[in-house]
Image 1 (cartoon, helix red, strand yellow):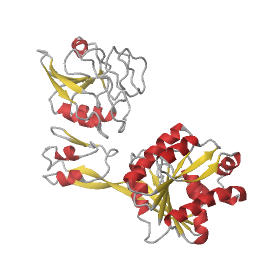
Image 2: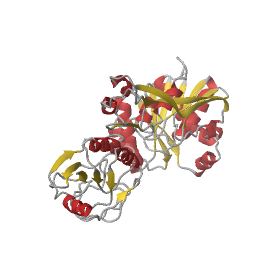
Image 3: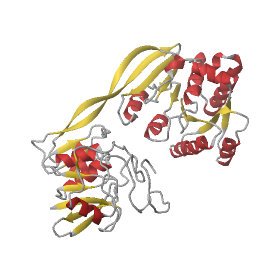
Length: 281
Length: 152
């Protein structure tokens, strides 16, 4: 059972919700927690895992054997990222654009494309109580976290309970993170900007056929903009996290909301509702 | 000799396109006769590497120089490796830019004049200077003189 937490817009409270749900879920049994926000992972500030291991994430970068190359340009034609420029007597490779699809080697009639590995990030593994914690971390300057996210998700074991903290946005990184989830929670806030990005994230989930619902963070009693959108789109609002100084203070200190008796009930309510929606047990 | 001018149209009266990689197209002009060929740029909305692909296309046209507004490091690298000189800061119509080039009023750049803009898609003018006359506005607004730089 895999539950992912996304949003579209950054800074809405994905990590806040994900880590608190993880804590509640881990009381009952072991869970996997995957921080797929590889460009800026921060769940470890809250769940405080003890790190156990770290593995490199590598991507293949093409290298052209210029002795054999006849500069036909087929590799450049097929490259979806325009990472290769074939000139009259030279081939230039732009590694920072390459996604490592390998199309250049497949299309080369002279068989002169080989690959060298380039480290683009790492996956750190640790433990926090009964939480098995995995974190993806992209190297500075790398353009795409997709391969790092793939490697993080390879750690999911069959029939395990998994919570995924997704990256912001609705691009490749989010798609890779939520792909295969049984349920996706979309965190939003009552503002036009957040509503706009919620719409996009909703469309991603529809396209990927992932059941999903909404959690309104910084709820201030005037959530109509989100409520109206959700009712118009037949989206369920699973719960709300109040706009309060107490919440902000706990987050700024790296503390969980569920450790506070008063704040705990909001997350617990969301957790129970999600459990019912997708029999997460 | 042949030069390539980035343009927002298909003849010498068209305004120079300040972007290289995501220019609407290029005029390949013979500087002796002013005969030209218009080549549309298939990389206008490329997901990434528009400058690289445009530079490769232009290099394979056998030009000796490129006249444009701004150029990024990747496109510059490809043109430089092909021995093509790059003249930036061109403005006005393609014909005016061509005259300025012939009169030696444009200077060749030895490096990129802007940063790589990964996958920004069309409709982005980059951190350029702008400031040239009426032209097509990239977001469908009224045409008119533009001030300053930055994204539109």
